[in-house]
Length: 434
Ligand code: URA
Image (tube, rainbow, N blue to C red):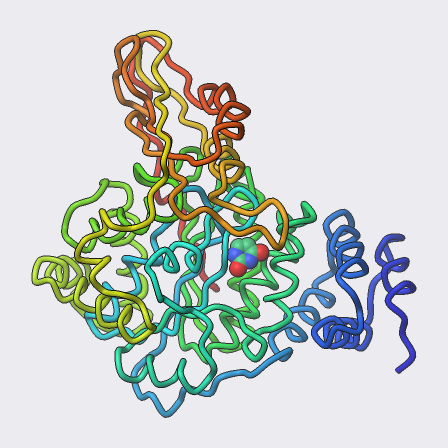
């Protein structure tokens, strides 16, 4: 087939439709390093601007999915169910959720991503535990999964390699918030896992890539449709992301909060969302008991033990789960104080996510190394009453100049009023194939 990257970029730039053969060629050549990052960056921007037709999206997702190995996990008898979030601030749910549902019998081959844009990534959070590796070859992936009923993995040279490259490229080229690029990225990873069921946590609000409910619904329906067409029963929950989830933002901070949840503590919103998604995963796996079974798994310590076992199996030092206070820390701490008394009406997820990223919790360039100890601890969220001078957030950082550049922006994340606002909805809607 005689294609060139330039002519395909031109076609997409000018709003013309790419054929399935052209898409297959492009993804293969990009995965093999023949098409360089700069041409794929231009293509991603053309897609960001002009979108994709349904036929293009199907071909793009399939080409990404087949860029590496596609698992056949049928030898593992039990139903395999995973969860994926479209990305939010403080969204650490995968970390408590996977061991929790695995401890009640759901088999979870979890393939996650790194931080993207202003949002954190499960892999970066897990890797704050010294030794923890999410780069598993297919044999090791299977071995951990069949021994422990779950595994935490990332894209590699053999597992959805096209997404591994494109995900990092989009992060550094402002091409993340695109419906076809998000849905193909998520669904190619998930379909490569050989799943029976999938729960999608589709975020909506300022800290989400889809800011409004309509856009989030469309994203949810698009992914539910892709899942159904590939024979994977897919259910999406649309959940609120106007303020961060939980009290902690930043990699080590979020790892610590996740461990708290498995110890039976932690903030209500993180617990509630973990339970809501866990119940849907159990439903898809055909496992009875619902929330009561999940609560039992926490109370008995089974869920926490599952995290300890999987951490050990993936090379991590489990003593950090027992003593999360030993996770990486920063040398500097600052406080954001309330300018006046009142009820918090806004605690803006996007602002907080961008500040955390700029302080080093995320990447601005593909090759950046994240600072695992950078974190923001929120002491006041929507609905809380504060007095003038009261602490709204504590910030841990290493780079003083970066903090000075972000200080004002972080303070602008909160607004106040004299009366208590209504509590924001956590789970807004459930979408599944009709
Ligand atoms: N999560 C992913 O895996 N990919 C995206 O594009 C966005 C969120």
